[in-house]
Amino acid sequence: MALIAGTFFGLDVAFWHASLLMTSVANATFLVNLGNAAVGFIAWIMLREKPTKIWLVAMAVALLGAFFLSQGAAAGNPGALAGDILALVAAVMVGLYLFFAKLARRKETAMQVLFWSTAATLVVAAIASGVRNEALLPPQPGWLLWPLALAVVAHVVGQGLIVAGVGRTPAAAGGLLLLIQPVTAALIAWALFGEALTQVQLAGCALILCGVWLAGRR
Image (tube, rainbow, N blue to C red; front, side, top):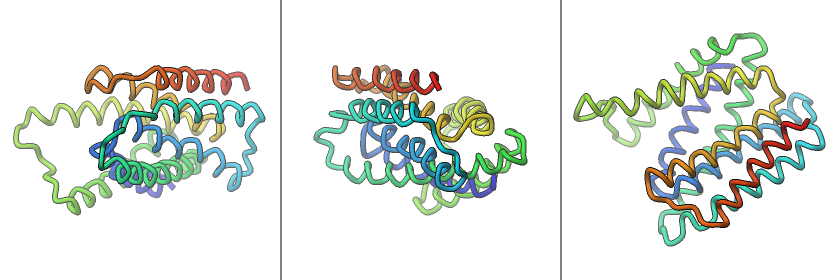
């Protein structure tokens, strides 16, 4: 199950990183996080994990906020539609990743699941790089700092906590809590890339946080 989860995560990373070059960070993050929302419904159907009524309300509020957050960010970008499609494909992949990671966590520890899923992700990522004719090594050794930061902060710490979390919480609640990612990504993109948030997008951030708060009331 961990190897299957890692395969889907590798596909998620490949499609999502490709979408980032074609649409805005906020838009790509919103679309891929639809997969986090979908995992609750997948677990409902496949694992009979029926979500609470407040979850349905909280998810609706958070998704509405995420939609508002994505509005206006990609206006006038001719590649935005193609980027959005790639992000939607990534959303399917991330939903399946979380589902199979939860199945793996039934019998294995979080670190075991993270280790074996990462091994599968590495293989998929290497194949994706080969398909796109991308060099695996940068022209200067110093450029490895950013992939190293991604590996430690985003993957080992971030995905490690997510994998640990899906084993301790219902899939529906875990997927909804992950919707805080578009808010974080939008704020970082504002500071680093000058993708300033409009009033509508800021209202979207507030709705997402409200939805996450409602989920905590379960």
